[in-house]
Image (cartoon, rainbow, N blue to C red; front, side):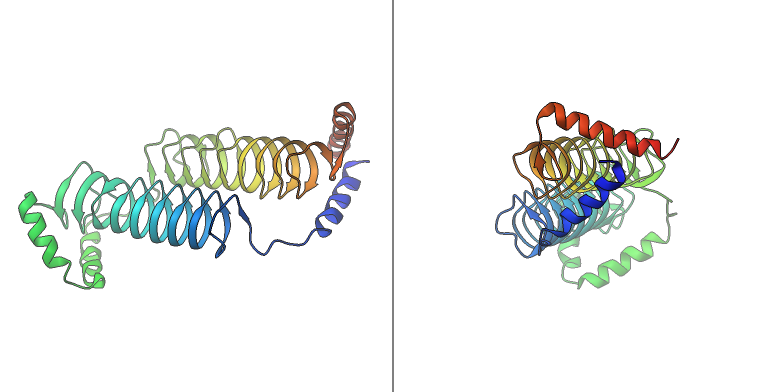
Length: 299
């Protein structure tokens, strides 16, 4: 079987299996959502990995007890936040890392007890970027909390006009300037919404990936290429909605397996081609022949 014949058979194999109503894997009490992996007690969540007790959450990783969030990473007890990392007990926070007990903040880092602040680092008890004592902060915050959120947001907008807007947001990362929303990473090129990555390129919405290219919504993976909506992959390519797999390619909805090539809906399997099991030697020989036939097209 040459590579072109393999692709045709792989497409036929995919059509034999019914499409999932929702892509939910290893999750508990989280039926109202899609693309959830190892989640628990999620309602209306989408593209989440290892999140718990949350409502209306999207594109998030390892967050707990959050409501109305987008790209909420390793955070807890947050409301109406987006593009945040390691934030807790806070609301209306945007583009900030490692802050807690704060509200209405943008682009703040390593701080706590902020209200209506932006572009601050290593600060506490500030209101609209002005320093206060702890007692003054509590009194003024209580007065501001009586206002509807829109009023405080309008004050933030006025304050924002005093600061330039940067083209990208790359924080706590090394050699990763060509991209946006990259945190805690190293050697990342053209990556977006990536956290804790290393030596990767052309990535989107990934977490803890290393030595990978062209991944979308993946986590805890290494030496992978062209994969999406997957987690815990090693040395894999062209995988979709797969988890806990290594040394495999061209698979859909497979888990806890290794040495798969062109397989669909398999679990706890090894040395399979197009869902058919082979002896190890025959598997390796057949896969090698198909790959070589693919390379011949470019000579």
